[in-house]
Amino acid sequence: MAKVIFITKTNDAVEVEGDSGSLMELASANGVTGIDGDCGGVCSCATCHIYLTPDDFKKVGTPDEIESDMLELDDNVTQYSRLCCQIEVSDNIDGMTFRVAN
Amino acid sequence: MQNTHTEPNLLEQSVVVIGASHGGVNFAFTLRQQGWLGKITLLDSDPELPYHRPPLSKKTLQSDDVKSTPLKVEKAYTDSNIDLCLGQRVTAINKQSKTITLKCGKQIAFHKLVIATGCSPFIPPIKGLIDTVDDKGNAQYFAMRTHADAVAIKTALNKSNDKQVVIIGGGYIGLESASSFIALGAKVTVIEKQQSILSRVTSAVMSDFLTQLHISKGVDLQTAKDVVQIKHTANKHYVVCSDGTQYPADFILVGVGVRLNTELAVTAELALEQGIKVNDVCQTSHPDIFSIGDCTSHFNKIYQRWIRLESVQNAVEQAKTAAQFLAKNSEPVPALPWFWSDQYEYKLQIVGLSQGYNEIVVREESPEQFSLWYFINDTLLCVEAVNHAKAYVLGTQAIKQNIKVNKRILSDLATPLAKQHLLET
Image (cartoon, rainbow over all chains, first blue to last red; front, side):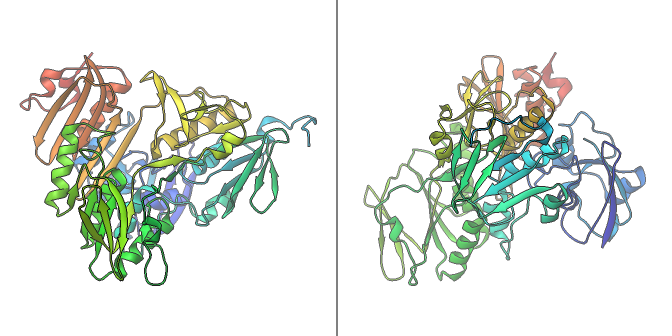
């Protein structure tokens, strides 16, 4: 079980919890603004872009080649960017706070 | 009833959306996010909570429980005060009274209406096709459009002993399904009428690659074959072609294209241009009626022609454009079409439209990772990338920003594919 917080572009904090699936599915199911997941979670659209804290980024891991290339579609990419369709909901991310990029 | 009363303030008006798939759902939520206060009614004839369609032929079909991926959880509709009415078929749009009529006879009034009815699979009138049934009379020929379709197909596959499936039509739906059926251990025949698969939408280079891919995975791929009849024995169906060849099937998947769901627009006398004709902000010829998604046709500013797109991205972007215009009078952003398809371990990503190209530059990092760059003279029209997201992203940036691509560097594998090398400013 993981409880996480998304901070939207307008600084709204949305707390959500889940125990499986991708972080994108969890966010979009709960209507987090800015997480669209238009491609359904297959790393094809880059509409689920989030920023992690440096520590959390280390813990979650770096994006693979396709994901880092897809992130380049967004002008707002940073070294702590991830597409959250590629992050699994698990105990590993419990307590983390993510900033929504768009 | 004539609408002679003073209308409420714009943001307090009632909006009715016909069709609750990618377009309709995204429209409703964006409209609410943009500050719309009035009633939003979202209708669909499909009784299921709206779901992602692209995974149906891929992840959904391959999963054991054939579960759909909802676009939003049920609670999200309540939280956003969107009145979701499922299993409701709309039979008429009454422009004069500004109401719609449901099949049950009920009428719903609107100030603004959105038609997001999409399209339906075309089932060709092949002799004997509708008699393709099992011993209990259940249809054993299917389309792949709804979640119910995916469930029915999986049921047919699970109960067939020989797991023989014939797919009529070598388009994206047929090929993605073929890839899933192979993963599920089925014997797959794909029958395509044209000389090559995907000939309507891609080049011979991509068509040949996908042909070899499917053959190497064990698909019996038959092109230039015209299906004329389905014959039946007690426990098998046979797909018969005009040259006399026939292919045994436990069930049949039909993926030969779609018919636009424009009946409501036609009877409401809205202007058509292949599909429902819409302007830059998705308004139809009636100022209070909008239309989005597969059923529409728009004049694309990038390609300077009327186009109709069957894609999730187009539905979603038109939904956002229409909602932002309606609530905030926002200017639209010219949309660049993009698509994707997953087949076996290959990810195909396409940006732009290749029609009209006179040159293809191939960038092949390896047989498993390459991209096709379609140009008309020096203008980049489209990039098709196989396991090559970098090419897809660079192509998107080049087309969107109208940046010239250096073709010589593009085809030179010694130079890494990167923005600073490739794009000429």
